[in-house]
Amino acid sequence: MPEKHVKAAVNEKRFRVQIKICGLTQVEQALQCAHLGADLIGLVFYPGSPRCVDRKRAREISSAVRSEAAVTGVFVNETYQAVMEMVQFCGLSAVQLHGQESPQLVRRLRNTGLMVLKALFHVKRPFLHQASDYDASAILMECGAGRLPGGNARAWDWAAALNVDRSRPVVLAGGLNAKNISRAIRLGKPDAVDVSSGVEQSPGVKDMDKVKALITAVHQIEIDYHPQKIR
Image (cartoon, rainbow, N blue to C red; front, side, top):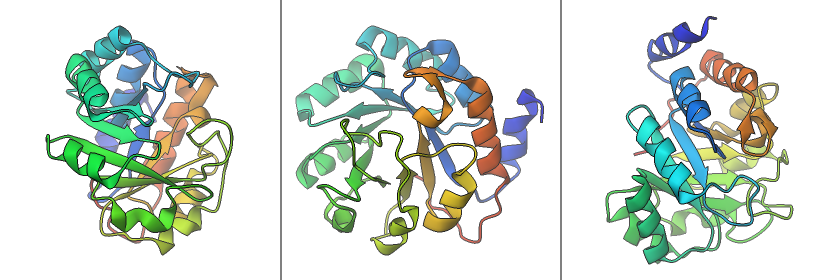
C-alpha cells in the first residue's frame, strides 16, 4: 500500500490496537512514523540507554510531531520535579515510567493532566500482577530481563498479559517486530503495542521499511475484542 494511503486506510477501522514507536532520535523519522499511523512517539531520557535523546533534540521532535501523535517521554526512577521539567521544556503530552516508581508518583503526574504509562515486568519488580496498584493511564507490560530497564529486544510469554488487571489499557512490549506482531496481539490481546528495536537499523535510527511493515501488520490484523484507548 502506498505510504500516503496507509493512514487513511487505518482511520476507516473503528476498532484497532494503538501503536507506539519508541526510541526515536531524529525529527524526520518521528514525523514519518506519525504519518504512517503511529499514535504515540517515544523519546528516551534514560542516560544509560543507547537511544537517549538530548533535551534540545527532544523539543524539536516534540514540536514537529505533537499535532499528529502523543509525544511520550520515557523516564527511569526520576523525581517528579525532573520529569515535569522535561515535560515543560519539551512540550510532552505523556510520560512513561520504566523503573520502580511509586503509585503515588503515578497519581501525582496524572493529576497534572498528563497521560502516564507505567511499566510492569514479567521477571522483576514491579511485577505484572501489581497492575491494580497503579492508577495509570495505561500499564505497559514486558519481560524485564537483560541489562537495560527496557525490553532488551527479548520476546516473552505475551499471553501473560491476559492474566492481569485489565481495568485500564494494556500496552504490550518486548521483542516485537513485523513478523511476530500479529501473533503477539492474538496472544496478549493488548490495547496498544510498543516497538523500538524491532524497527531499527541501529539504536535510535529507525528502518522506515520495517516501521511501515509493522504498522501495516497491526492495522490489518482482525481482532475479536474492542481495545481501550489510552487517555
